[in-house]
Image 1 (cartoon, one colour):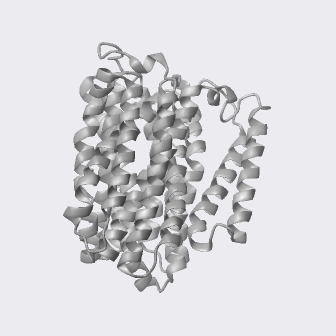
Image 2: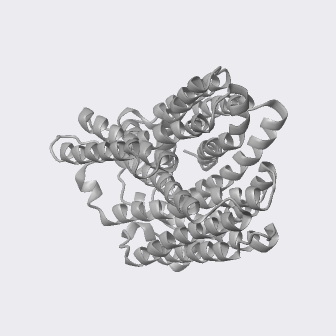
Length: 471
């Protein structure tokens, strides 16, 4: 593949990342309008968002492994097609139930597309500086996607109504699918035959039930029967998955893969990073709106400086890795994440302003985000063989998604328990939640020092300049 075509493929895959992250954020802004139009209460509205998160998180691992077996481009196009069809169904939904069902199918399509897109990137750029730069582009689009979704959600909902946010998904997914047919090679599928049906069912069911328990914990409580039953059943299914994987000939996740220290530890670190970062976006937006009295659109724009910092730093992350090493870059990123979270927590004030409370620490967090995302992705995927790229993609995406869901559930619970109805009480709750997020960052900083990294991740810029076939 020529360098120009590789660049076009990277742009396409990065745009896919932007779309999927944007889709997570855009619906949150439109939810009040959805409730007014469909007559849904707060419980129903929460599940418009939660249905997407559950299926997205539950199917990432299965999607990644299926991409290895069936072909990465094939599953990528299938995921985009499913996302477009479900978005169209959401755009014409007449009841809250229909919309929730559409959002659940959207999550299925997003999981397939996300896992396949990441695997395509890993195949396109072998481990080394080229992959570091490509992962930097992914991180930049992820950082930009959250703010773009918030801003676009406000603009489209105000001008064209909430249904327009779903039709935007249809348009973008179709455009990406058509471009993929021209840019991405068909490639080959894995040489392995057979499919681990027992592993697929237990893993998907277990992850889905755990995700259901986590997203429902903030609404029903951590000790509610629904949360305990769903969480317990999910953990039992995951335990059954572990037993199945040790006994079948071709497991969905070979136990030997999970015994790789760098892969295992990098996935844990990636989850910890999202446990701090994902809730931070949500909490800052709430603080700007509920305490400082800003509109949803203005609150979303308040996160724009952070996203611009991500976009500026992400492309330079590969160069920094080469200069000081992957481990040092990772520890620096988690250290900055800790500093930024603590600074932001202590800066919050009931009578503050955006400039005096959020701006400066958010820029530190904007520098930290690509450093931790790129380095953990590099470490988690460096040892993946070509036939394991989908599996590596599914594992790291699952870690990030569940880190996001778990972090949001925990930090929102902390904010609620420590807060109240007044501006001062709400600020105190947000401060406590951000300090809890800082504790996750501190733990990750300590663990990153102990991480044993694979040698190939430290390849020089003169190595690994040729790309593999894109599947």
